[in-house]
Length: 382
Ligand SMILES: Nc1ncnc2c1ncn2[C@@H]1O[C@H](COP(=O)(O)OP(=O)(O)OP(=O)(O)O)[C@@H](O)[C@H]1O
Ligand SMILES: [Mg+2]
Image 1 (tube, rainbow, N blue to C red):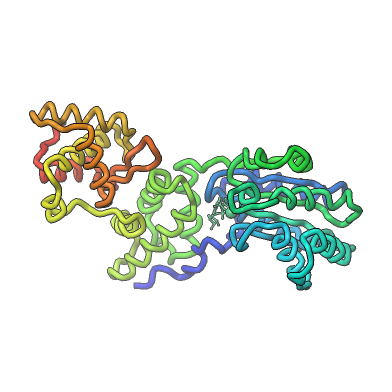
Image 2 (cartoon, rainbow, N blue to C red):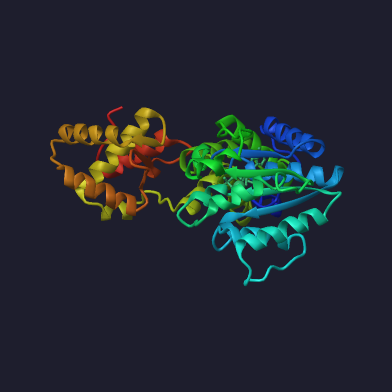
């Protein structure tokens, strides 16, 4: 049965007409840029972690301003350039104003050419967005700070129709890598994008699937599981949530289901995260000590009621379980077992301190874990 009526609307390039839970940021950006159309040029930074709607809200606000005011919007995503050099940035922006800049001219000359092209747009006002600005201070960048310095001083240089320059970055500290003079031109206008909460992700997923799926075809329980997994496994990146929704939809369609449920999301997670379920065959390939470590991880996840377990706690519970079962495991053996389980996709060591217990299952971790523990030869002492 056809469930997905508009799958393309789940693509991360698609900008929805509304961004739930981002009203504050969208309104603030809109009014900052709007006021700059009448007055002095503004430099604005949009800062927040991965997949929190920064690029989309910039696109949404600029779409609105291009429609209602005489605005030309120039946009460059530094990650998509072969290198974030001043020359490439300036020529990329110039190309959006219809010019091709010859390779033989310097970055300084390319910038001058860009200023002329911007002035030629007058009386239209120009807004420039530099996305993935962290790249300017990263290892790929030579003289990235030049880009900040040049673009933020356009008005000082006599280019009167520049309204705003917007820098989008993940880390608040990105600009620390700039020189003092470059940083000072950035100013202090920052719009912050805090990570989404569980409830907000559920809302956002439901909003986006309402557009993409036949009405009623996507169960709320599926959106809830997606939100949990997005936070646990994908740092809250909404892009991952949308991918999961799309995958789950395709899986449900393939199975001939009439609705997308948690079950389909679980399968989508398994595919997207490379997670394996603990099958009999897999358990057979594990050594005694690997089973012990896996069992301890599952027990800790059960105790904590979450899929992430701090490594320190995991180590304690490995020791406790070993004592309980009258077995011995050295630190080296434990670490080797962790590595093996990680490679098998049963645990995922995320960052230096936490272990994600992939084997614990999503929908009913308790039930599932008990079964796995039995299979491993460690009955749950719960
Ligand atoms: N509040 C929201 N409502 C609906 N969709 C959202 C919302 N926030 C983000 N999205 C969607 O999530 C995806 C990622 O958003 P976006 O690209 O704007 O994030 P970002 O903050 O720029 O991430 P990155 O730092 O990785 O560039 C997009 O498809 C976007 O449409
Ligand atoms: Mg972005």
